[in-house]
Length: 318
Image (cartoon, rainbow, N blue to C red):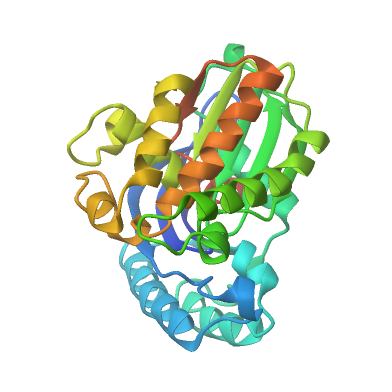
């Protein structure tokens, strides 16, 4: 089948997946060839200014140029690049799209990046996240906690039932509320209020009452899972589909919030690009955990290493 390249450009990171499509019962599956992630902080200051910073676009260009070279070397036939929360909000996004079109066209002529809606982002995340889970564990609630937005999706083996994209994420919350090192009690309280306000409409729009399994994806959630598991270094094979009790999750979240940046940077599982924003991500996760527990009765979080990136790649095989 086709060899595909998927690029996910979010508020905090840009990621690449190169995979071959494999025929399987129920539809095509992916056989990974290459995965890579670079923290470029494209959303730097977007919440405050409404525009991309020049240096953020340049960081993204450098990373995407390397991705395009890798895709050419590995013989990618089809490529799709999606841009999410920060790009939806940026007033100067034409400059960003001109840059991405120039680089992507070296892989597949005419290929361009595209901005996806929060709804499509949620549906792609769901498709990628539940692909390795037993359908009998559904209905599933999937939360994709990004830099600028957090998606909440409920569905089962037949597809998505409801989805909502909330304008709250680890970068947005950090820039708005958390400036201290460590943050003050007042900053934490302000962040909690902001997070609760932004997530409330998500839980009003998406009924999680019948959910059996809560699945978390993206870097904040996978890092939290690594800390719950007590790993000394980040190991995606041990994190994928691992389970964290909500009690352990709460403990790890608040440990991170109380740490200084230096203390977080010293953790063996911590990516350097997450050090300054994962405290906010932990607060978002803690609120998600509280809502999921009270509304559905779930007692644990299942963490998936597969997410929107896998959903993008699978769509190229349809």
